[in-house]
Length: 361
Image (cartoon, rainbow, N blue to C red; front, side):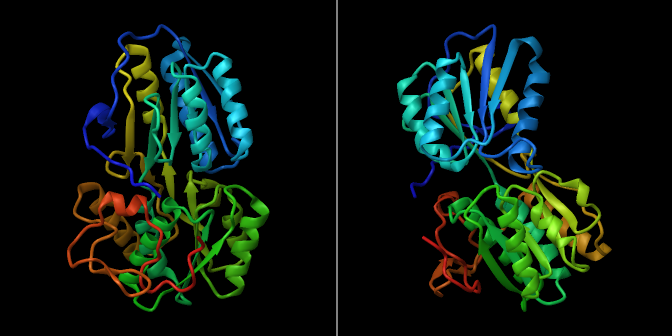
C-alpha cells in the first residue's frame, strides 16, 4: 500500500495538509453529498458520519443542502452512485468507506469542478480529491489497557472487518496496550470480511466467548458484538465509532466515538468562503476527532489507568507505538524509545510480536 504524505499544519484547528490551490471565489450555496457503506441506523460508523452531516446542515442552515445515499456496496455500484451525484448538482461529495477509493478517483477525474473527499483512503490522483481519516488506533490503546486489566481468562478478542492498515494498526495497538498491563494476555482475532453484517458480527463474538474470551473489541459497524456480549455475565466490550450508549454501563464500558462534524463543517465552510484547498487530514484524540466515551462499570484503578493513556495521547507524552517493538516474526521494527512514523502505520501489513495466527493478505 502507498504511504500517505502528511504535512502538519494548524489550519482550521484540524491539522490539514495542503497540497493544492484554493478556490479563487466562494459560493453562495453548496450542495454537499454523502455516500455511506452501511445504513444510517447502524448505530456505529455510518450513523456517526451522518451525525456529522446533520451537524453541518444545522451549522450552515439555508446555505447548504445535504443529500446522502446509504447501503452503497464497495465496487462497481460506487462509481454509478458517484456519477449520479455529480450529475445531480453536488458541489462536494464525501465518500466515507475505504473500499470507495478507486471509484472516487475514477469519477473525480471525469468531474474536475466537483470536490471529492474520501474517508480512510490514501489516493489523491487528481487535484479535486482530498482524503481524511481519524487515528482510531489511539482509542484502541485506551481499550487495550482496559482489556488487559479486566480479563479474568487472559483471553481478549478483536473482530476485524478487512485486513487493511487502518484495522491492522488497531489490532496491534490494542494488543500492545493490553500486554503492557498484563504480560500473560493472549489475543484472538476473527476476520468478519464485512463492515456491516450484524449476523456475522454476532457469530464472531459468540465464537470468541465460547473460546473463553471475556473482553471483545470490534472494528465493524453494528452493535451486534455488544448484544452478544450482553448474553454472558462477565464479558465486556466497547462501542465502535459511536458511543453505543444503550449498552451502558456494561457490557459497553467505553467507546471510540468518531467526531466527523467539525471536519465536515470546516470543509463545506471553506467551499463557501473560497478558501478550499486539497488536503490530507489525519487527526485523533488531541484535536477531538477521536473521542473516548464515558468510562462506566469499571473499578477505579482501571478507569484511572485508561484515562491516563487517553490524556497522555492528548498531551503528546504517550504514543501507542513506542519501541522496542518487534514484528510478529521477531525482526526488529522500532528501537528503544522510537515512535512509529506515520508512514509505517499507514502502510502497516504485519502483526507485532506476540500475536498468534497469520495476517490475511
